[in-house]
Amino acid sequence: MADEQRFDVVIVGAGIAGSALAAALTGHGLDIALVEAQPLVVPELPASCDLQGFDPRVSALTPRSRVLLEALGAWDAIGGYRHCPYRHMTVWDAEGTGEIEFDCAEVGARALGYIVENRAITRALLGPVLAAPDITCLSPVRLSACSLLDTGGVRVELEGAGPLQADLLVAADGALSRVRDMLDFSTREWDYGHQAIVATVQVENAHGETAWQRFLPSGPLAFLPLPGEAGQHFCSIVWSLQDELVDGLMSRDDADFCVALEEAFERRLGRVLGVSRRYAFPLRQRHAVDYVQPGVALVADAAHTIHPLAGQGINLGLQDVGVLAEEVIAGHERGANPGQLGLLRRYQRRRKGENLLMMTAMDGFKRLFEQQSLPVRWLRNTGMRGVGRLAPVKQRLMRHAMGLE
Ligand SMILES: Cc1cc2nc3c(=O)[nH]c(=O)nc-3n(C[C@H](O)[C@H](O)[C@H](O)COP(=O)(O)OP(=O)(O)OC[C@H]3O[C@@H](n4cnc5c(N)ncnc54)[C@H](O)[C@@H]3O)c2cc1C
Image (tube, rainbow, N blue to C red; front, side, top):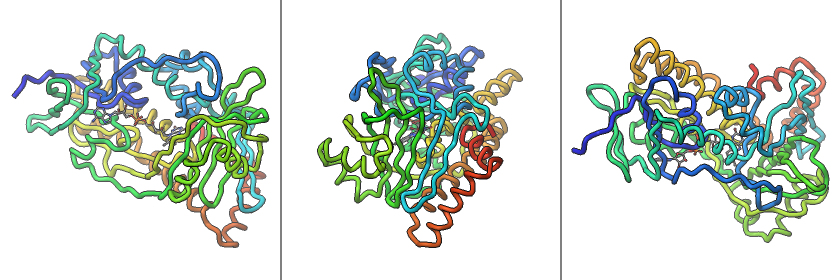
């Protein structure tokens, strides 16, 4: 058996969650390895705003995520690159007159959130991580097996590098986590029978720093504001649809797709003038029953995947990262092994309830807006208008979505 290199913490997956965790743990006297299947390169950021130049994957970061990224020293780079704060949100029901508007001034905030290209977040996190002397980055290297050791800790086998031993193995390897499956974490999951079409579009009219969401019986459609220049207006779209509708839309040519999109969005921003390359992502809700075992922790999408309708996925993931880092660092300072079950359970206790609440709420919204029966449609339209008029209820909703309570 090959000699194992030993680390205090091995993180598998250098997406936003894994990179953020490495950034949070560096500088605290821990020996860290970050293992990533894809080549780890700091992405280039194009300067000009044009349809094909935006990253098709964007995140709606909450003010709470901003605070965490500030603490990691990453926000200056993220905020220094093009991004779009959204100060308003308009949500409406395709089946009726229900409509609700949110404005950051109602909760005394400067923005409800920030639409940021994912590669800008990755760049801001990865640059310092690659330079950190206490982080060994292994890429392109794939985890191929892992097992718990009788003596405590975890043995990790890799394709492309020798085996490792870790006091704590963190699975940040995404929704299809191999670590989660190999170590028999059980999950509760269901297929929505939905996919999300994601693309950048150019629209005729200014978006007014507003995030728009229309609930159609086939699924929600979001237009998220992006920065523009020279009188050009861009949005990122997330169009969730039943599987059987997605193929037809994906195979349309751009002009036909823009017409279908305009109709689905009721031309709220005028004509859709162009669309970038489109991508379709299958949507599945998944929640690990336990996030931890002795020596192992799941974070972000490896622990929970959620419908993108409220753009909460990576926001919940970043909060997992913040809490796990806090517990590991505090434990290390008092001489505790980072894989100690008591320490990991504290992380689970602090995160699971909030994640579950958000997942249940998103699932409920999706189901509510799929209902076609007249009484349900009447109730939800009346409910939407009612909430819009009830300032305290509305403010609570907003503060919750912004991660402020
Ligand atoms: C259409 C869509 C829109 C979304 N919009 C939003 C939004 O607006 N706001 C928001 O908060 N969230 C959003 N989300 C969710 C968000 O994208 C995810 O929550 C987030 O990307 C998860 O990050 P992660 O780091 O956990 O996982 P990932 O980004 O999946 O990263 C996992 C990493 O692990 C690596 N890896 C996997 N297996 C191995 C292995 N065996 N060995 C080594 N490395 C491995 C992968 O290469 C990858 O780099 C959206 C999701 C979808 C599908």
